[in-house]
Length: 519
Image (cartoon, rainbow, N blue to C red; front, side):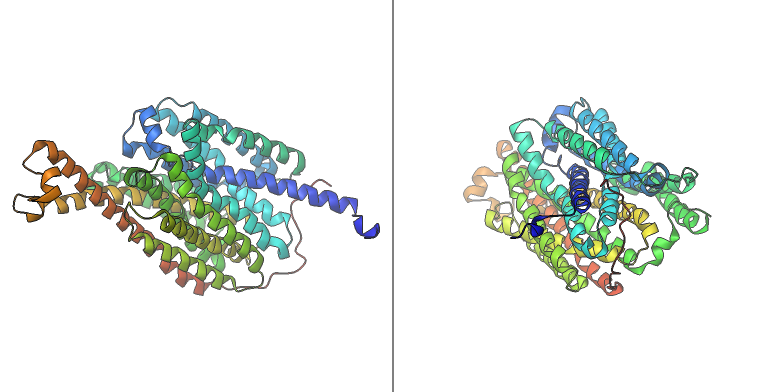
């Protein structure tokens, strides 16, 4: 090779290396935020014992984080424009890292919920800011690959969270699922502080406190209604009725205010883009499936399958490998193939995997479990990358930060609703099926009058009656899990119809980057 072929223009080399460093730091921030949505899943039984809480109360550790992140995602666009993207990025990373350490030292459920709320508040900005940074950092022809790289963090975080959480809990302690954020947080803060250059900011920009307030009221009240409905007997409780009314009122006032205010919290122009609106609905459904299936599978493997925490985490890891592989493939072909067909293929894979899960029992083979997880993870990867590209393809650059914030808001709300709905349906259906199965437990049931059933589940013997009740509860729980898997399948498949509303515009060549990097 000639010496000329080995030379590179110094400014170009510097810009390329700086872009790589910023990309790595943005990916670390994305992965940290996404990982913490599920990393505590497999550690919940251990946290329940340490914090002296009940099984339904400990789920607040998950939902408090998701709800706080959902509410605080909405003002990210305004905060970025008012104080500068770099400043908000760094402050959010510092706050998230500190809150993670506080979660690790929490001594009660109240402390844990408060610190998880703080973690969600500071972590809310990390995903939309990293996405907006990646979109502006790369030219239009490279955005498909950039979104594939960014999407790996968003999708792999919740998927690999239980695996990493299980390993840390088994080898060290459940508190290390929070301590693990410290070194990565410091690394990302240092990289962004040194290499990311700040943008212009608008010091006179006013914040729409009314719009933000009614949106926060609507989301918060709705999530409280879902979380506490099962405990309070739903609409037989005055509290649940009040929370439902507040949720409806808050969301209605937000919609009216957005359409009538002079400078609303979110621009109505966002909802005039058909690609973006259809993408929001698909992202909502994907958000429900992404976290709900993970939250269901972790206790399923431990409590029903009898797997230790580390093994349960490892069995969920293939889902992440499937997502990683699919995103690498989708990132390369999204600019050459029809994105809607890629998404349709991915939705089909997710639907098939959930249909297969409806036939599971706790003795499902490890091979089937691993293959199903890989197919489901690959389906999520094939949906997420083209969805992100096509949803923002027709959105103007001045709406991009607000658009990414709203995208993350919808994903977080979908995740929170998915976890809450599947949790209360699991509890409710377990009780319903327990009552239905118990109807057949009587002295006239011939199946209980001979053989092993008579020996171990003799209803006339108080010593074996408890074992019979335990088995009925186990069978009822298995059926309840199957019903949840069916629900997730029914949420996924209809979203394929939304692909008909999307179009695939041609990318404009020569798009300029809007993020300044140090040369």
